[in-house]
Image 1 (cartoon, rainbow, N blue to C red):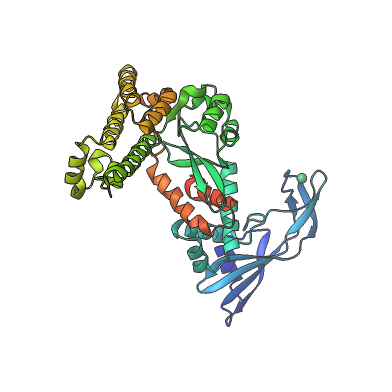
Image 2: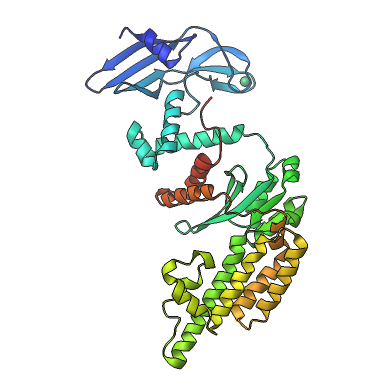
Length: 409
Ligand SMILES: [Zn+2]
């Protein structure tokens, strides 16, 4: 093959490297290029000391971008240096990262495809690489991006847990609420998992945290209390989690009342109404409105429970702490005296965690703020069924949601 100069330009090969020979195998639609180098000295990859060549490692092959429809492979024997400090090391080559089986340009293309394709398998099929090779590219991209990441201040954090039934495992996900990026993924949902994240921050980063949105989950509270200088004073309990407790309580009241009515009268007006009580007032579908209006003006216990729940939602509209506190006390009293056990219990929970619930007035953040981020994570989680282990999930989250610089050099 004559056009080695052309390939040198395309590949970005420069002195001391050049293309020694090329081979075109038409039947296999394949181009092979062998790289050579002049006699020269090389910097040690660890310390940079310039050293003479010691010997060569066995020939290696890298897949490059296709040349038209021809798959293109680059071959070379990488020189090794003998460094007095670091021992015998392979030198860095300009066309690929250490340990990669792809050239830099090919690796960039694979990263782009994985980002754009809805499935990893799709990306693999387009370029004709294996699943493991694609994972290698992703894992390297994440490791590279995380290593390059600079310590920036993140005022508003969201902490959330994701459950994996398949692996019987939980993951803790910490996100930057304003930027919509995932900052940390850790296995487990205990205090030590979240503490690991906090402890990895620099002291100024820890100091800069204004608020952390989370569920009313004691291990996360404990980690925040012990690892951050501002302690519990920066915790904001997620309003949707708080309301979720009340919605569950309403459902329990309905279930019990329905059962009681069935037993005593053999007929319950609550039959088939489960979901009507779970909607927020404004989200109730039009077709159910009439039925629901009738039901909620009855003397049913569930109607009362529902009213207490709907009333509670107003708490998150307050912009002044004193007023919010007064409202909460009134509401709490009403709920406690409702003689509806599940409602009273849920109210007691909110009361126990009231400082963090009320802190929403000062820092109106929720874990749901990064909605786009959450749906991205959920879609990765759905696809994670195909992952061989939970580590793959972690890598995929960082890859797609980490806001990292993924490309090689
Ligand atoms: Zn060295």
